[in-house]
Length: 137
Image 1: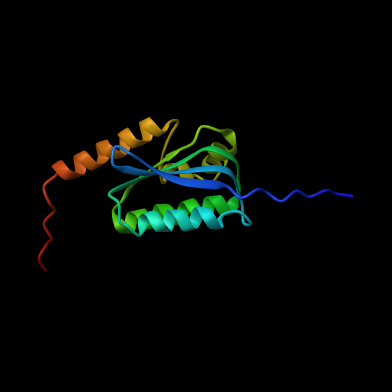
Image 2 (image 1 turned 45 degrees about the vertical axis):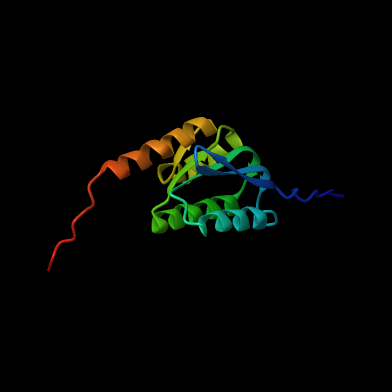
């Protein structure tokens, strides 16, 4: 008989690093375990941060639900104009990102420090740019 072990719910916590929220996820993400991750990401984005880092460096399984959750986060960050970076350094996360080309939609970095620095650089560049003028019709 097949002994199915359901995936354990991931642990999710939020840290601040250089005034950038970092959502740290550890464990496995699939349809049965994604809810706490989704709730935490939505809670953080409800505060409209200027930047966000999602740390998946301790994720051991990243299924299609994890990809969908990440895509939802990418799209919401774009709507909010929140700079987003991802931390991933394990094949379990990197390979699905590459297969689906999602790694072209979000900046992926091997460490939290590099991801935070990239977000901070993009925020500083954006702040230094003059506001865009709207074209009159």
